[in-house]
Image (cartoon, rainbow, N blue to C red; front, side, top):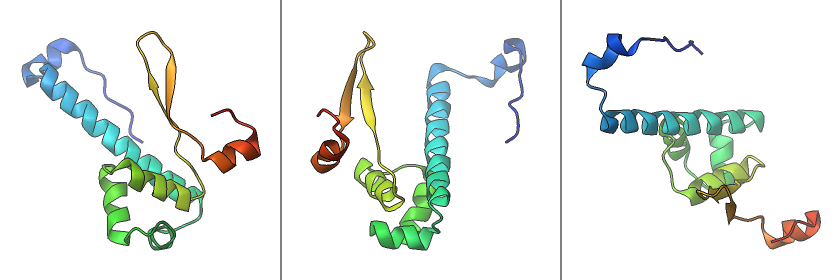
Amino acid sequence: MKPRAKHKWSEIKHLGLNPERIASAEENVEKDSLAIRLQIVREAAGLNQRELGKKAKISQSTLSRLEREGNAEITTIIRYLAAAGARLEMSAVLKNGKTVPLIHLPAKERMRKKVPP
């Protein structure tokens, strides 16, 4: 990966980087990051898009778009990860620093691993 170029504010302020453009750029970075990470998971599982798609019951074209755009419903991402032998863990982080789990392990898996709900 190419290292980021560093610029002084005086060199780039004329580009009109208002809060809306910055937020939009950050959103694009997040989508790209997800897409790249999903591809890494698939490759680590030793699967190509067609194989993973068959296991996840997702078309190869949908998988390709997901790995390119990183924009999908959570249920699609969960199926993608499960087909690759992985799972999604997601929590909300509150302002006070506490976390609230949003996606739990299935009950059978919690019992097997003796993890509290």
